[in-house]
Amino acid sequence: MRITTLFILCMGVLMNPISGQEPVRIGVAGLSHSHVIPLLRNLDREDIQIVGIAESNTDLSDRYAEAYHLDKNLIYESLEEMLEKTRPDGVITFTSIFDHLEVVQACAKRGIDVMVEKPLAVSTEHAGIMKKLSEEHGIQVLTNYETTWYPSNYVGYDMVRNGELGELRKVIVYDGHKGPKEIGVNPEFLEWLTDPVLNGGGAVIDFGCYGADLITWMLKGEKPLTVYAELKQYKPDVYPHVDDDATIVLSYPDMEGVIHASWNWPFNRKDMHIYGNSGYVFIDDAETIRFRLDEKTGEELKKVPVSAAPFTDPFAFFAAAVKGDIKVAPTDLSSLEINLTVVEILEAARQSSETGMPVKLSR
Image 1 (cartoon, rainbow, N blue to C red):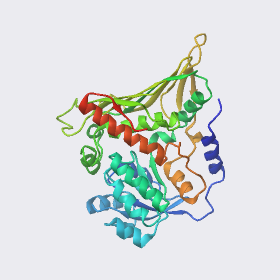
Image 2: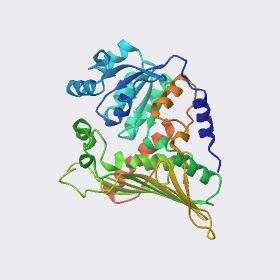
Image 3: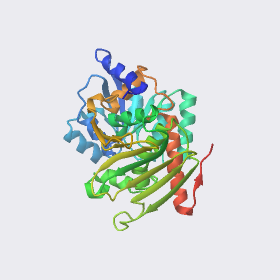
Image 4: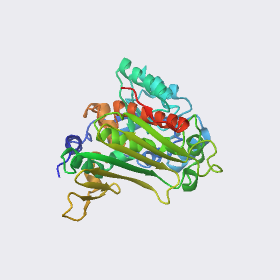
C-alpha cells in the first residue's frame, strides 16, 4: 500500500525538523477545554514556545499553574491583553466552541493564525464570519481533531484512493464514550460541553464532527446532497439540555456516509468502517486496520505504528503551518474549507432532527 501525498510531504517536514530554528511563539486562548492538558504536560519542546495564556477563570488557571508548574507571569485574564503584551505568531484555542469566533476576531485583526479544537464553530453563521475574517486578514484558521493524527486513517484513505476496495459505497464512523460526566471531565469543561448555546449541542457536536470531518476529507471536500439525523436523550436526567446520542446519514450521488456519535458507548471508541463494492477496511484505532479485498481471501490485519503519522501531535503541525514549512491544502483534515462543510453538516443534522426530514445542503 502506498501512503498519501500529504503523508509524504508531512514526513518530509519531520525529517527536516524545525529544531535548531527559533521556536514559534504561541499563545493559548482558554483552559476550559481539557484537550489543553497534553500541551501543558509537554511545554519543554523546541518547536513552540508558549508566550502567554488567556483565561478569565482565575481558579482554573491557578489550579493548572500549580498542577503543571506554569509560570504565573504567562497567565492573563484577558485575551486582548495577552495578545497585546506577548504578540504571538499563532494562537491555539481551548475555549467553548461558541467562543471560537471571539478568538478568531481578536487574532485576525492582528494577523495571527489560529487553531481551534474541534469543531470549528457552533453555527454556519459563526463559521461564515471566520471565513470572511480569514480572507480579509490573510490568516489561517485550522481545526484540530485527535483522529487527524491516526496513521491508520491515512492507510484507509490510500486504499480508497488507490481503488483497492473498488467503488466506494459506504463509510460508517463510530465516535464517543460513556459520557463526559461518566468519564469525569473537569467541571469547567462539563459546564459548556452540555450547554446547547456554548457547545451548539451535545454528542452530535462533540463526536459528530469527527465523522463529518473524516468523510468530507475522504471525498476530497464533496458535500452530501442531503443530511438526515435523529438525536436522542437516553439520559435526560444527566444531560437535560442536549442530546446524548446522534445518528447522522449523509447521502451522496454514489455512496452513503453514516455517523454514530454517542455519550452512551460502553467503551471509548473512534473507529471507522469503509466499504467498496469489492472490499472493505475497518480502522479499529490509531494503529490497527483490518481489511478484506476479495471473496477468495480472508480478512487481514495490519498494524501501523503511531510514529508513522504525518505529525506526532497537532502543535508540531500548527508550528509548521505558521512558519510556512507546510501549506495546508483545502482538502486537508484541518483546513478551513473542510471544516466549513463540517459545520454545515452538523447544523443540518440538528435541523433534520427537529423536523424529521432530510435537509439539503447548499451547493
